[in-house]
Image (cartoon, rainbow, N blue to C red; front, side, top):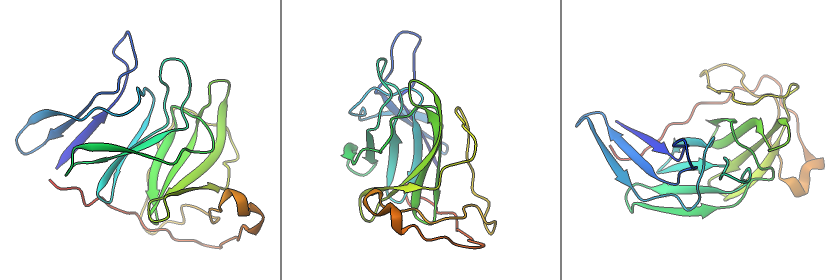
Length: 176
């Protein structure tokens, strides 16, 4: 099993460095640096990639996101989120990467959006009813975690409601 550490703040500046910890060998390895400095970012392993999303670069909250390939040891840019944010929750539900709440540089937010790896697009999701920053997310298998579909921003009027939705947790297939 591996643990990825991406970005952060060293007391002087926001970092773009990344490392991986191998639990079997008990060793840390420096991997390719991200394309952007990011503190307060969301990082999650899903499918064959590690995603680094949003954050703060020392001057601005970020909309940008990138995906790391452990096989190639490279980062690639993915489409930007609709809203800049740091200190948000991140989780994968039904093969969609959800970013929840956070801080946009001016205020704590309540909006939610999700990324579909298959279409390489971000979608609006139903906003939370309360503003939240510096939060954590988790998925409980079999529990109705989310009540509405996500919708493409240019087709938001077509939002369809679901009742008793039971999303499934997704796992990563990253090499060990």
